[in-house]
Amino acid sequence: MPEGYDYLFKLLLIGDSGVGKSCLLLRFAEDAFTDSYLSTIGVDFKIRTIELDGKTVKLQIWDTAGQERFRTIAAAYYRGAHGIIMVYDVTEMGKSQTFTNVKGWLQEIEKYASETVKKLIIGNKSDLVERKVVEYSLAKEFADSLSIPFIETSAKNSTNVEEAFTLMAKTIRDDRGLIAAAAAAAAIVATGKFAST
Image 1 (cartoon, rainbow, N blue to C red):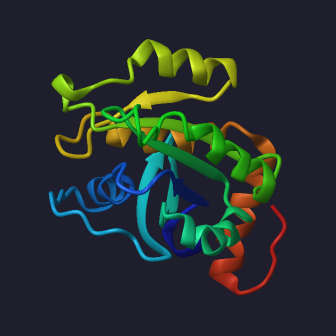
Image 2 (tube, rainbow, N blue to C red):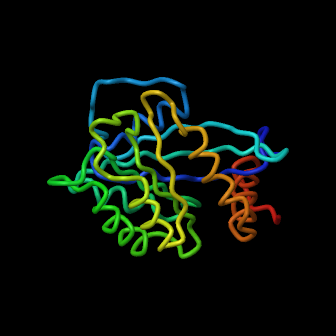
């Protein structure tokens, strides 16, 4: 087993600026939360190892900037990703339309990612119940129409954060082609050369 893990899954967080991608990653990787908002410049990443049905899975999670000016930088990270998580803010639908913009992020995935990449849609900031404008049923219906898993989360109070990343990891694990690629990636990292899986 390479460096203490069976698989290396590369995940990408995408979505508009301010939807809470960095906060979700901070909550999942370090069980921490910050109220101060700082836009990600380019990309950032964190690593966390989880257990999944008796296998050790290393998650390398890339957090991309949501601003238009960083899109070309972020596009380079789509290639090689096993899973892409699209995040929107459940309190925004009007002028900023972070939920509506998920369609645009899907086009980015189609353009830059592999055909086999797994997807997940997250509606973040579910703790802001009084400000919520994107109803769960609307988002779920949209995700179901695309056969993409969907979950609502709150990075602030940790609701469904662990579940969201675990769901993404299980979705990748259940794809035999992706699991072989992830095992090969783990072997390459451990040995510095290709090993058959």
